[in-house]
Length: 162
Image (cartoon, rainbow, N blue to C red; front, top):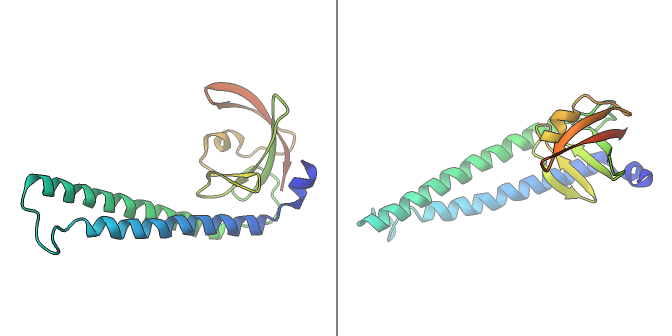
């Protein structure tokens, strides 16, 4: 795992993650346009019956929800731009972290805004707000913390940070 950890280019991985967020946002833009198109019946005419009105309302709610998610992704991308890729000494935003659990299973986490457990080259991208990060926040190499995951509690040790 040492070679894998050492070979990771944080800046490149961060840019690939930004590309992933941009792709998600672009997909939502198309879906939102489709939802808005569904808010009209027969061109620009208002819906005439209850079923049509319900369908139009549903499309409107969908378009609103998609717009909200697009705004969230835009905010995440803006926050991501502010994350530095220099080496870190503690677990926090921008840190590349190797953790080992009680069963000696090692995992590499990259702490970035918008991370939702996405995997890029074996690295799990997690948000600073993720439950595991709330527990590990501020930890240094050698620190062990009790983490609850999947309904069970276990110890995790931070073995490397960059």
